[in-house]
Image (cartoon, rainbow, N blue to C red; front, side, top):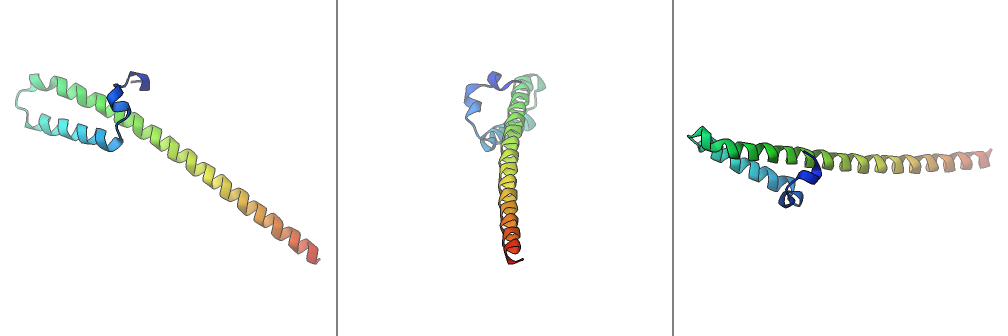
Length: 93
C-alpha cells in the first residue's frame, strides 16, 4: 500500500492512535461469534496494520537520519579538538 493510497484520516493519526484502533478491532473480532460478519473488520485490521508498518518505518528512517547527523557533528567536533591540540603541541616543540 502506497502512502498516497492511505485514507486521509489515518495520515494525520499517530502510531499510538492507530495502534489503539487496531486493538479495538482485535477485541471486537475476539468477541465475534459469526465469522462471516467479521470479514470486513479483518480487512480493516489488515489495512491498519499496513499503515502502522509504513508509519513505523518512516519514523525509524527519520530517527536514523537524525542520529547519523548528530554522530557526524560529534565526530567533526572531536576532529577539530584533536587538530587544535596537535597545533598546541607543535607550538611547544
